[in-house]
Amino acid sequence: DGGITQSPKYLFRKEGQNVTLSCEQNLNHDAMYWYRQDPGQGLRLIYYSQIVNDFQKGDIAEGYSVSREKKESFPLTVTSAQKNPTAFYLCASDLGNQPQHFGDGTRLSIL
Amino acid sequence: ILNVEQSPQSLHVQEGDSTNFTCSFPSSNFYALHWYRWETAKSPEALFVMTLNGDEKKKGRISATLNTKEGYSYLYIKGSQPEDSATYLCAFRNSGYSTLTFGKGTMLLVSP
Image (cartoon, rainbow over all chains, first blue to last red; front, side):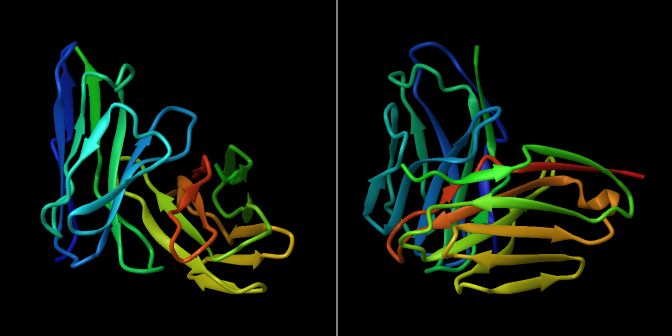
């Protein structure tokens, strides 16, 4: 079955450390997205990519970086510059104006 | 940043009750309105994508309406069941090239 796989499910970051969240899709979707959810907040867009080797900043890109070297993969790196990284991170993909498909998410916490 | 509002923030109903929620969005430059259901410990799943003013869509006991001129969409659940308990998200897109802007969601709890 096609879908989106995010890993790991839980991740712990030490101070000053960069961590990378994985997102892989086998839906052949062109566009991929990273969202962050905090308690009481809606999903906020971090970065998105509409085509391989191209990506754009979303509303809250500071302290994050991404790459899109393959259509299937859109990893998100949470850098040490992100001062408040504790949150739930969701990856999604879509094709045109079709509904977005989501992964199961990664919960990131600070040690 | 576009403003997408959902109300109420949370709702607790009894099994068998019918309920509805509201999603408000900017009435200018409308392209599409999405509804998603997000159950605890699962990923959000799409319910509807609505594009035309006056659209009405239905999926089982769940239906949605769209008014793009006044900037709102209603989601209705008829005869709520405990398995309907979830957070319902709406998301707005103002052009074919833009990204989705999500509301904060309405959390529904249906008690047996």
